[in-house]
Image 1 (cartoon, one colour):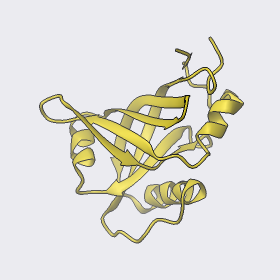
Image 2 (tube, one colour):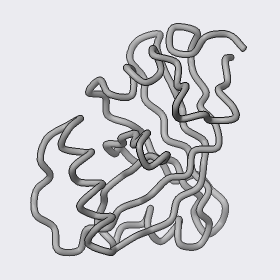
Image 3 (cartoon, one colour):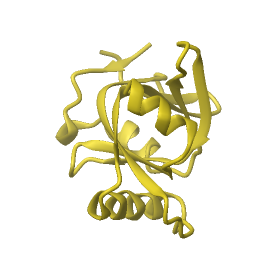
Length: 139
């Protein structure tokens, strides 16, 4: 399985960067209080300029509670035989600048998000990318 580590944002493989701009829903996996996986569908976007990935969500969600306790996560997307997973950590941000940035990036990949006064942005520090050979070149 190809791995892209360390993450060099200015040198992302083109096939990886393109795959993360195509419209695919993702699965965000966090850890529940008892250590069990908690996996939910989300939209996730890369932000090479700020060297992170973003997810927008409601501040009262279980994934936010999980990430406030333990920031480790995985975000995966699949399209047939092509797949990629982000391994990293997230911080939960509620400031207007971060939420606006995350919403702008989300809108570019998916659609303009509906209004949500309780919205937060999950800023993901990407430690590594995993992926199929169609997405990541062999190491």
